[in-house]
Image (tube, rainbow, N blue to C red; front, side, top):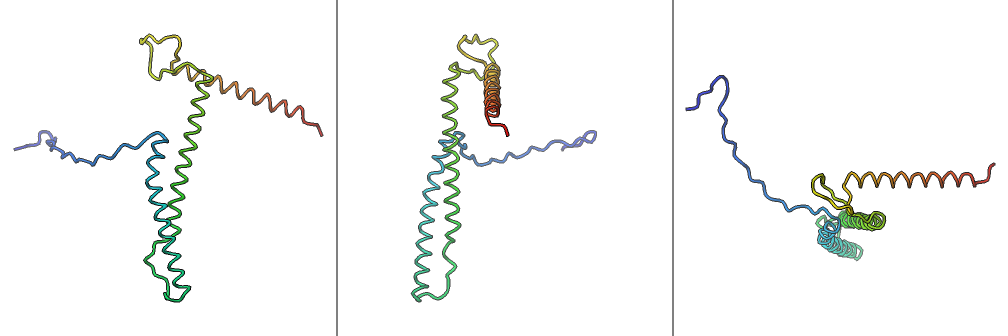
Length: 164
């Protein structure tokens, strides 16, 4: 028999609820694109089927064999919107992938030293690698240098412009 002592209630065991395991979402853009290809194919198929049904229904109404509009056919514009939405998502992931590849190429060209993303005080890192704080300092210096060049070019262009 559980008797509360000094106002403290005994803890009841809490039942553990098992939640269904969801597959891990892909983090890289190429995996996301690959995962969208199947739904894109299905969406295109549904859009074409709906278009054929709507055309068939319109043809029957025009010929006079069908009176009124049947509400059973799915809306073409909704299927087309879903298709375009998937196309836009794929386009976004492709553009992001292209930019990431371009940045990776630029990084390897202008900073050919590998970056160690973890703390490295006692790991004995060789001289050919950068720690992450060193990498950030290098990138910040490059950004400020690029801004300085940009400002210099803007000032030079303004000086070249004819005065009114």
